[in-house]
Image (cartoon, rainbow over the protein chains, first blue to last red):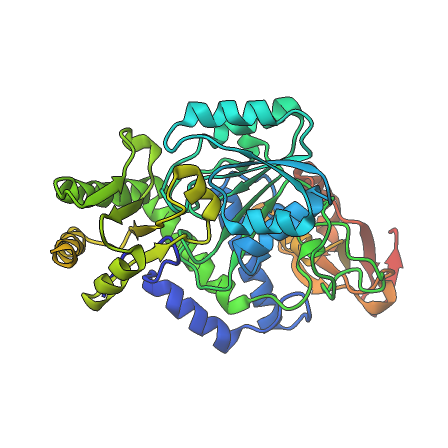
Amino acid sequence: MIYLDCAATSFQKPAAVNYAVSEAMRTLSSPGRGGYPSAMAAAELLLDCRLALADLFCVKDPEQVVFTSSATHGLNIALRSLVGPGDPVVISGYEHNAVWRTLHGIGADVRVAASPLFAPEAAVEAFRAKLPGAKAAVCTQVSNVFGYIMPVREIAALCRDADVPLVVDASQGAGAVGLDFDGLGCAFAAMPGHKGLLGPQGTGVLLCRDGKITPLFFGGTGSVSADPAMPDFLPDRLEPGTHNVPGIAGLLEGVKWLRRKTPAAVLAHEKELLGVFSKALEGEKRVKLFLSSDPALQAGVLSVQMNGLDCEEAASRLAERGVAVRAGLHCAPLAHDTAGTLGEGTVRFSFSPFNTYQEVMAAVEAVRKILN
Amino acid sequence: MHYLLSFRSLTYAQRAARILERAGITGTVSRVPKAASTKGCAYCVIVAARHKERSLSILASAGVAPERVLLRHPDGTLEAGA
């Protein structure tokens, strides 16, 4: 199989990730619940992972690194802490349902700062126009549909000036596009552990500015147990229940691999493959590529439409030829609506640090075959 | 004799132990004895009595000061605020 659905999950992982998961299941028990070696070793593993993530994302203290089960979980914590029913919230036009549905569920007054694809200045202006009076703002770092690298730094500066807390959805950017959490001054950044961070599914990370956060779940933390209220400090406040120790063990190995390789090198590799793929297909009349004219604005995610071929049918035919991609709306109808692709959807090709030139050219051949 | 430096969470206790380790002071992360934990489960770093003042100074500089300091006598009894 040629796996080009890395925007959904990084199916290929460093070998150390698989080994760490297995070893953790064999040797580690529950952190924060006992003083014996297997519990303390598990606790050490969690701290190692927090420190590695804090270093990768420029977070001052490891306590600000909270483990979640997914980016969606983290976004729910962040948004439910900042926003209540009727509160005005500004979001970009490229948000995932993890943001859009959560705000809808809260009953927030969602204001979409819509702007054209690959037009960062317009995105900044759209936020500038919508921010006054907002209770919070949300911006994805990279569109999961189009790979569009949003101008998060500029939007964060606007939010700081307006004193509006910003939530960054780093689901698609983490591990490839740099994120300076302290430098941005955002309130939260949420990300999955299983995409660009190369960990197992069921892992996620929420970076938090401070401890004044409404917990989503309540329960045992192994700290201040006599108090019926949740601890008022991080990470305990947001981490009740038993941790996903094997998952975090794998996540740590994924992050270690990334720190050795560097996110910049990963991004460069993915962009190179995207360039090879799009260059090879640009002459195909039936193919429409959603490609930025400025390569700096696009990560390793490319949406494609094939004229006369339903996107789901195209993905199905590609799967028959051993090419794994995702079609449809990618859980981001808002992004498709903003880009004008809501009716037809797109086929999404997303590249990873483990994809090769040969795989990309084989995928190009598969696209040509299903079109002819 | 040893001192127990008690922290509000396991994560803080672990960080404190690592900070001390880097300064050449060995500290062991352990659970706080039930009799000394006023709020339920808590963790501490145990250091040799001779390292107490330097440990507290290093941890204060690092912004990871303990909530409580307890002296543990050789017979296991604890003395608060020592």
